[in-house]
Image (cartoon, rainbow, N blue to C red; front, side, top):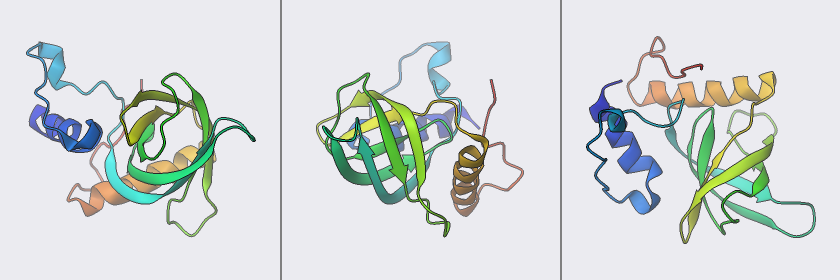
Length: 147
């Protein structure tokens, strides 16, 4: 993917409130810090810190194999949450435990997923690939970089 596309994805889908923040003038700045591509996706999500103290619902804004952006009440940065994602694939919601809040804004926050179970990983990967393909990328497009 070109650095222009990386900047577009960063600016349009990961920066809080879609603000157009310039990237630093470092050679590495053109590279996205994430190891996977994100796709815009609007879906219901519920998340909690534990069973009793913090259970909320929100809206998924984008998704990758390594994390997502959620619009809703923000837990503190560094908090681990359990997330339930509706992927719209006709299957029950995907449950991801141990997702860490890595940034937050007034009305949204980003989480990084822990290593996912194979079944969950495949469902999320299939969903992301589906939306990448709908955006004009081919199925041969490398959607995931493995470290």
